[in-house]
Length: 330
Ligand SMILES: NC(=O)c1ccc[n+]([C@@H]2O[C@H](COP(=O)([O-])OP(=O)(O)OC[C@H]3O[C@@H](n4cnc5c(N)ncnc54)[C@H](OP(=O)(O)O)[C@@H]3O)[C@@H](O)[C@H]2O)c1
Image (cartoon, rainbow, N blue to C red):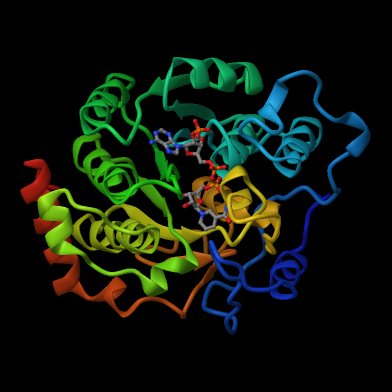
């Protein structure tokens, strides 16, 4: 472990002192069995004198200044991992938390494949993160593109880790269903299973519902529904694939482009918002072998929707997905 690290205590405190947000709240719980030292983390704030030039990191186009500053920080400070390098795929890694996890894991020496919605965004992320192993392309609002994306991913061979990070916020209900719910299901079912899967959820899962009729009819769902669905795909797959490590992760209400859609109010720690995914992917710290859980800042979160661990509800959700897509997940 590096000496220049956040301690886990400081990481948790930085979250615990902050307030409740709309996209996700900072709901700290009592320490769980996941008491462990932190994964290597940078300890210094971003060097604000080394801000990116030109369009690099897409400030005010697809990233906030905070995300761009963190990308600069990662580039200048993260050191190679001394364990076994992993092959990692991250959906929605052209911006925000997904791009930060991709940048961090690349700098650590892992082979990271990013995912972009189209060729322009693929070019952007290749410019932003030149160490990437590759970029796959597909707009998750379009299920034909999601199916084609699964083929692209399978053509690259098996991954050790897949992070289902992509999601959108202000979309119509049917588009949200495709982008945030049916697409992660389809990718999970169609892509060669990796050893580890993580699904980005949100504290808004608390007010989400199953919406089985809407899934079957291709009707509209809400963002909270979609974040419950992503978390329930995680708990269902953890049960169906006991040899895999599968978790849902709440990054907190962090200052990404998505959060800006509700104004500049995000309250949680940006670095902590992507480090749980990194901690799981590297899998070397005690506690990072957790599975079947909903995590917030490397801890098991207890404030969760009752449906999350309801096996009957999980089966109903998977059955509705299978009916709508014609694809069975096993
Ligand atoms: N920010 C928060 O406060 C917060 C809170 C709770 C949960 N989350 C969750 O954390 C995850 C990451 O969010 P973020 O805040 O980093 O958001 P972000 O900055 O908006 O980044 C989202 C990423 O997903 C991609 N994406 C979205 N829809 C896509 C689609 N239809 N097809 C292909 N790619 C798509 C985006 O591509 P483009 O760059 O091309 O748009 C971008 O790379 C999401 O699952 C989100 O729900 C975020």
